[in-house]
Image 1 (cartoon, rainbow, N blue to C red):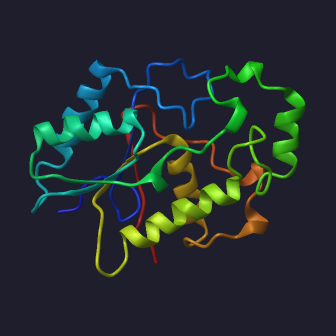
Image 2: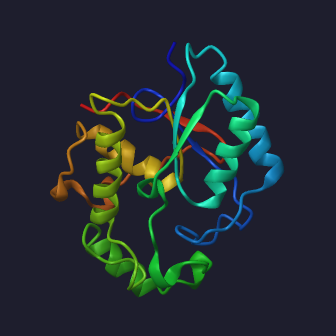
Length: 198
């Protein structure tokens, strides 16, 4: 029985961080709120309760996602967790840890003007590089020999997956513009559902 989820028709859960959401904390390895993480794990375990076999979970290596994976496996020991760096949030370079209103407006405008290729925060990732690594993880995870039931990841990764899903999982650079980037992502501790890759 399918469970709610992201990519192969299953789930991408978003962990609840401790830092305020008004901060840029993409690759910054801040911990999640323990109480909210436990609540999310309980809801997720209930959603997986009727899965016919132990679910396969692919998880970001950042600790706010690892905390949720650990809480889930404590409730459902039959779950198999695979940690994957490709599911980490986008790296925002020198913007990491700053409040968004501290980021220079001209720098944000420069990013928007060259959304695909601009290295965010001077030393961070480009959106194109970020989307390519997420697409690679999706193709690997949902290829002929492996199917993930659940991803535990971040808002940016979920948005990238929605962008790819809207384009039949193709990385169309001409469409990688700020105006085409998905705005919606699940709230902390919630999930999103998408069809399988290809």
